[in-house]
Amino acid sequence: MHLLKNRWIITVGILPALFIYLLFSIVPIFISFYYSFMSWNGFSEMQFVGLANFKELFQDSVFWLSVRNNILVVLASVFGQIPIALALALLLNRKIKGAKFFRTVGFMPVVISTVVISITWRMIYNSEYGMLNNFLEAIGLGALAQNWLGDPTWAMIAVCITIIWQFVGLYFIIFLSALQTVPNEILEAADLDGASEWQKTRFVVLPSIWNIILVSIVLCISGSLKTFDLIFVMTSGGPANATEVMATYMYNKTFEGLRYGYGSAISVLIFIFSMVLILITTKLLRRKEV
Amino acid sequence: MSKTVVDYDTLSRQAKKKKYTKKGTIYLILILFTIVNAYPILWMIMNSFKTGQEFAFDPFGLPNEWVFVNYVDAWVTANIGSYFFNSLFVGITALFICILIGSLASYFLARFDFKGRNMLYGFFVVGLLVPIHATLVPMFILMQKLGFMNTHLALIFPYIAFNLPITIFLLTSFMRSFPKEIEESAIMDGCSVFRIFWSIILPMSRPALATAVILNFINNWNEFSFALVLINDDALSTLPLGLANFAGQYTTNYTAQMAGLTLVLIPTILFYLIMEKQIVNGMTQGAVKG
Image (cartoon, helix red, strand yellow):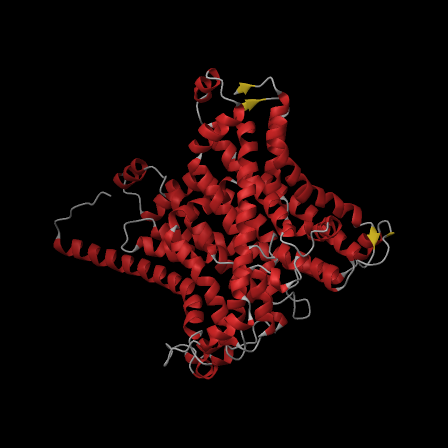
């Protein structure tokens, strides 16, 4: 660390980053708070309405449906992505021919743009030409064919499967590289003691990568809270709000319904909801660690 | 790996058999995972070379005759070339500015001692948690007020702002690891603070810079929600936005949609295969450390 006499040099160095960060990332959050007390349609004069937007929001059943769906996405991600990724990483963490190939293909969906993934899966789920229904028919299970994204009972499940598919690879690779840091000596010692593979996994491997698992869970929660693109492109929240999440509802109310104040109020709740959930999970997981 | 040598013939044969079935099961699961991961993409690429009729009749096989009419359709009706250029322009401009001001700020945050340094650093890093969607409505209004709506500036600034936290986080922790002596002789020689940054610290930070550049680029390249809200002009659309609009208009022309997606997908996959190691490192590090 160096002490610098010239304070203004530091200011000059940090100011550009601070300015852009403040103006385009932090300030908008506060503006949302302000706008959430207003009512206007984008053209009309802004009108102060106090807490009316929030009052309406708390009685808005579609909003609560979108909260529920958001929670479903979080649960599907945490209980889908993490266990599948962990199991696959444990399987691949040994001498296996083609390990590199499995890794490469495993991670591939993570780099593909969400929009491409959404459109592709929209076609996979298509009721007439989709791959899924064609496949079911080909193996004689044609009776199970559904209008996956058009049927409110299936749409949310279909969306969640795509979300799991998209990010399993990320956690798979994270776990795989964590597994390679597990010291070999301990595993060899366990071998000499005649530990079975399951015992080694349970008592040596998992405890030593536990921290990474926790980090991944937090990551998975905060990542799945950000779900917007995928659902917006796949279903726009439909059919009949069946796949509406908070962000798509906010978009639809603001830019389709032209209720800017109401949309801002939803934004504020998205912000609070995300922060609270992330805080709670980090707290809970930290406590377990001790 | 230690192997126990067993003389008993039958026992060893049994063990071998068991070992092979186990290995076989592991391969089976990994291959299944690979198919689930890669097949949707291959399905799409394959069908993009079929006529609409052939796709409806035989969606699984290879094309009987490889046709390129879908590519002509996609290229002509969707301005993929112009989306491509817009994405590159916005992505690279934002990346360049973000890395420049981000590394400069990181340099002061990492190498100098001043009051409020830790607080400032924490303030930047907290940005990792800001949910993008909570800022869409205020960003829309802010861009209108600034007169940036429907210009590339409307995307460049938010892209910089939302990539600054991870950029500063990665670079600051990397720059902190250099020994203090590094700058001392340069200071003795009368080098200016900015000269030290440019000719000593920046070149030394190359590995962290590479990670930051890749993360910035992938984030910008795939970004959809800001583009959706802030760009209304097809001529200014980035790839994700243009593609979503194209697929929305040609909902029934599946093979053309697939051709459009393939055109976008191929460069991404090539980029991924060429730079796999850096991309995977960048994305997993960026995720875990963030």
